[in-house]
Length: 237
Image (tube, rainbow, N blue to C red; front, side, top):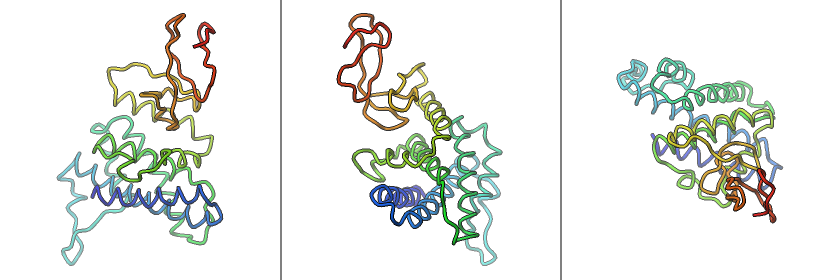
């Protein structure tokens, strides 16, 4: 199951990469991004439901010929919503994100000639799924699609600006869960998310320079700033 998730995310990330290089065939790439991420999401929902409710009746159903029956993403999402108490806050948020992805995928399948404009639900879902499987199963993005600079930068470029604030809040919530003993993260000077850790912003995935002012002791971050200045006292670093 996890290998299937990785394979589907690999296909989605490959189309994100090709779309960033050449947008001439954007309709083709966008379609396969939506379908690939949806498939990854469907399997992810199945795996998580199996973990939080292993004896769930939805997982026991079979076809008339006795072969296993795989429930739809809609059915899995509806069932998993009953077990929110067993999930982290970020995973609960992921369910709502995947709900929008399912709607986009259904629209595409019911009207395959439609032109996909905004694929923000697929972008959101890709980034959220990558972080979710990294946190729950220890599978890093580099293990799926090794790319430099990080492929997430190209994925994030397709997220419409009106979704950025909500996305940043999601990243901040994930970090709060990953580092329960750390109560604050430096604000990223590039994207504005309070998500800078280990010289990288986990929101925009850019490399960030971290400083400590020799004058007032203030910690702060800069992005491609050749002459960093402390935002607190104005001293040059």
